[in-house]
Length: 307
Image 1 (cartoon, one colour):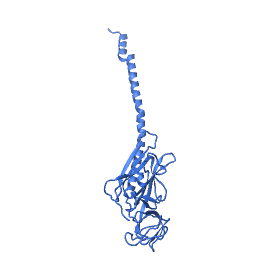
Image 2 (tube, helix red, strand yellow; image 1 turned 180 degrees about the vertical axis):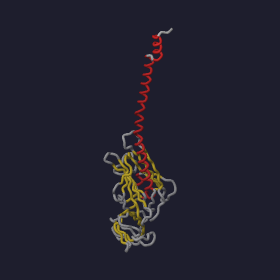
Image 3 (spheres, helix red, strand yellow; image 1 turned 60 degrees about the vertical axis):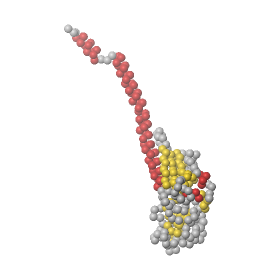
Image 4 (cartoon, one colour; image 1 turned 120 degrees about the horizontal axis):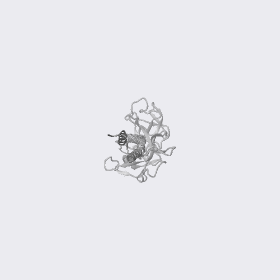
């Protein structure tokens, strides 16, 4: 017969844990807790970085799209579509060029040709009534405030703002004097002229901005580390054949064409540019550990017309 005391002792012995078992269990729990805690920081870091990575990607895409649209616009045959230079915000890592002026014909552009010589650089431009002058109520479609380019067909050109128009005399007067008077036969067309360049911000960062003829800069992409443009030219005036990259030195040796662009002249090699490569290195705007994103676009210039 088993006593009541024996039954109690056996039940307690079977239901309990030994000290060694408890120590082992505690050690396992401590190890598991440490492993879980070690995963929290990386997971939180990855979670915090996700919005910054998305922001960098979106800024890269919007900036690349804007540049592609601008560079694919149609330009004049006799003048350079792009004029590159280094802006005041240049960086040693930017490459030869980090700013670009783009001159492009607007869709459905107003246009015409001089029927007589311009009397002087500030004089009115008398446009003929035959093609390509649109038969509109104003002078070939031009209105005061419109941005236009005039080209003599030999490479000289000016970009100007239309000051006044006179429909009865078929005249357009520039708001400011041109670089020189233009002869009869010169082509006048409505254009967009924008300069893309890096601009320093108050917080020390740089932004890619677009500056039209009005001079009011329009921010395109914030948080730029650096950016640059590469120009590729064809042989002679032909669009065919292999392309060669133009270095800064190639655009400083002439022959020079007098014009109304900054500096008063430009290197003739700019008329041979057939492709533009642009690259932008975008920096995250937050403190999250997200790498810079490098975006590259390559645009073949469209066939050009006019002049």
